[in-house]
Image (cartoon, rainbow, N blue to C red):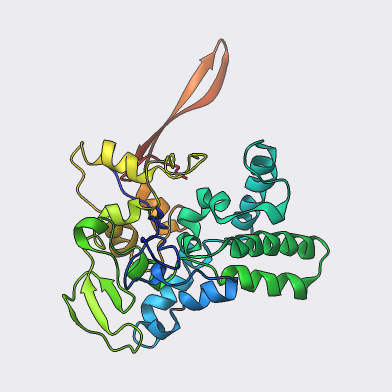
Length: 322
């Protein structure tokens, strides 16, 4: 059986606060982005993960990224944002022990079932940011239904500013085995190669090699096995990496997520799945065989056709996914 792969987001597992520290460490420690004070507003969180300085030197990668699902990870087409709202109204508000009776009761932990992949840096924010996000989604929906285009556009822009950008992948989530390889540093960008060398950026003055950037486990942080057992209320979502590990690899597959979704597709940082024709064409092979005959029905001659269609999954995981 032939295969291929899928990619999109990032996993977060909050680490405990350091003893004697004035603020929780989130996923990071020491000199990491996440170890700074927790953001208290959406604006603060966006500013902390501002990757505008990357564009000057990496314009092509940024252009590709801007067309990807990563650039719209929280808002999507609007449907993703509304799914956050549905999870609250039809989930949290109906669960007697969640502590959520209305939007103002929402905390960061309530959103992490979705945000751990769609906005992992939310773990580096206070509960005020979680409430601001859900209130913004609710207000956007109202403005959209009321056909208040100016207000809807303003809120959409705010929600779109929350995404999986350069710093989430190339800093915050660039290292998976942190006790083995250390925690990502605030002043460092991580890539496929580079060692420990200077980087032409005032904020990110160092460049180091990420031990996982070219491996499928990097993508598996978000496109993982599920359910999320580290959460208070586990939830099932993406399973591409689990399927990749337990089906594709044992049957002799050897490609990584990055090979199929970035290199061979020609899309680079515009990582796509079935929405891009180049990916859907690669994922499924279709072979059609037809044969025409003339069928005699007693004294009546009728034309007849037989059609055989073979569909073969060529992806490196089960499809559809997520």
